[in-house]
Picture 1 (cartoon, rainbow, N blue to C red):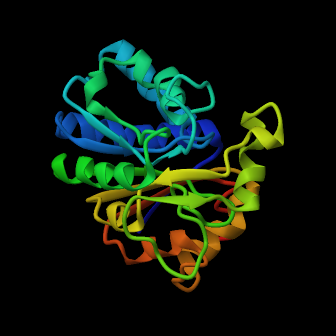
Picture 2: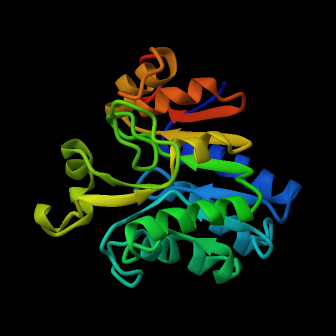
Length: 240
């Protein structure tokens, strides 16, 4: 595992953006797995700046997002499709048909099977960007008794709901379920980049990458991958 240490969130974001832009430059038709939430926002902002300057071209890139809230339509400002359009896709030259996010209103079994087909038909993921939940979740793969392999519908834990409350007007507005890419699809990515920022992530960073491999800490499975890069700021890496 490679570890890149940024002095703060902005420096961390720039280091991670360098890794993603290098992937696009080296393979213009690459498939990149993307994440939502606060962790990757700085990465997307930096990539947009470089696109505007003409340093990176996304016209041949395919993206596959990790997850989406069940029950939210794409136009809902709290949906992850809206998040991606607003914070990234709408500012670069990626083709809309090359961007993939689970359909929150689709029937569960059909959508999970469809999304696994999307990943297979794209030829797998060249580089997967991940955030790290406070309880160790990656995507919305929550702590449990086993590693869920394929795209599935998950009931979110109280800690995840609490962490996501800041994006909603009221706690009861936070969806209780979500579609998420499975652990197998994540682990089959050729390279994985994990973002961790803030002092509140320090303990789970240590547990996930230097503790036992257990589905109670889903991110711990990343220890088994042969090409993982952890990019964190000083606060998040303070216990390593």
